Image (tube, rainbow, N blue to C red; front, side, top):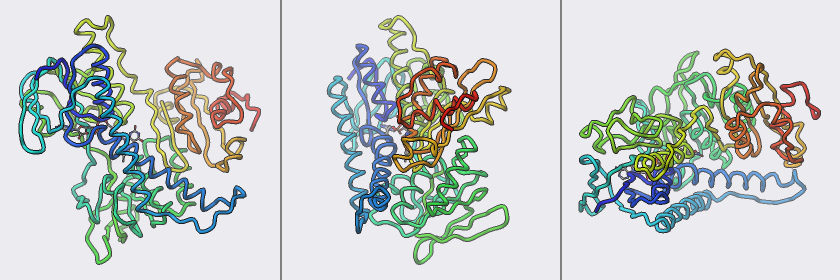
Length: 468
Ligand SMILES: Cc1cc2nc3c(=O)[nH]c(=O)nc-3n(C[C@H](O)[C@H](O)[C@H](O)COP(=O)(O)OP(=O)(O)OC[C@H]3O[C@@H](n4cnc5c(N)ncnc54)[C@H](O)[C@@H]3O)c2cc1C
């Protein structure tokens, strides 16, 4: 079979790349070894958000009286929660199947390996092989959970994220190793369900990529919720016990031993770049990722790579934009588009964590802005002063904004609280349009909304606040 474009991998990078290529008039095939939609739809973004929604419903049910609604005997059904999450994931995956059909993209199920320039060999589950060809190949093989040598995942007492969202029974206790987005989301979920959770983080603070104020607030909120947190701590070794595992944890003051039914390793990702034929074709990799230019082109003409298997933030929305860019660049090269795509500003990528309270951030942290030599204006608006947050019974958290003092450039925003993952898109658009504080203050924000927090924090930065 001959195509114009073949996409290897159908995650949030691969399937939009395939659709965009088809929209641009190419004959397209997509190869997938497991489930359409990749990690994001099947084992990442979507099923975790479904789990977290169940946590939220349970919290509301337990604390209904605070809203004047008495619900007695609210109980969670762990199996039901997992089942709902898997159902949501399956539905989304079927949605991708529909999109492929709608866009006349051939779906080829099997393991794809790059063979020669323009050729991929696909091995189906029954071991039958076929070779398909295309002028352009977009590699979108994504990533898997990273394994630490001293924390090997056995899928039972030491688990990764896949097992964490599909456990048959709820563990009584859990050690979560790593406090990035995945670690803290699961910590929140399991704690809310009644599992005793301890988070062990190697760095001095949890969610270490966030602004320091966000880390402090999340730690405060998590401790209030009953989650134990150990920072500057490393799991040295784990050994099985009668009821689970014992973890030897090195801290700044010495070694401690922690016992739990289960350990969740949430220590980052490894790109899927092995055994797909990169070495044979001379496609360059560096630090475990495929090297690409701003259009996603590898060093070998005709081969593009996008998403988690390339450098850049490992996020679904980044993968999708990279996929679309790659297809648009192919169209430009093939003279179907008269301009090249713009490329991505990796300093303007929103990052969201969907625990409670939620976290959302974009651009420079306060420290990064100072380190970069900016003179800055910082404004912080606490949700205790927000009418909408008060009405929602969710006054924890704040919006923090950072502007360049000289020109008013919107350098960054860092939020923690109810619904902030919806608020961050305003800042993404604002920064994209090179909006200054002046425009934010003069754009009317609806009342009462959480989004007023962005305007209010800006007003605080400029000494014009009226609500605090
Ligand atoms: C628990 C968890 C929660 C997350 N939550 C969020 C979130 O809320 N928001 C967010 O933006 N990101 C989130 N992420 C990250 C997000 O899932 C990834 O950034 C995103 O899925 C990357 O997309 P991708 O297309 O590059 O790769 P993937 O989604 O990994 O897809 C790659 C696909 O390629 C297939 N494949 C690989 N090799 C081959 C081969 N040789 N032949 C055929 N098929 C192959 C795989 O089976 C897979 O389907 C989360 C991740 C995890 C693990």
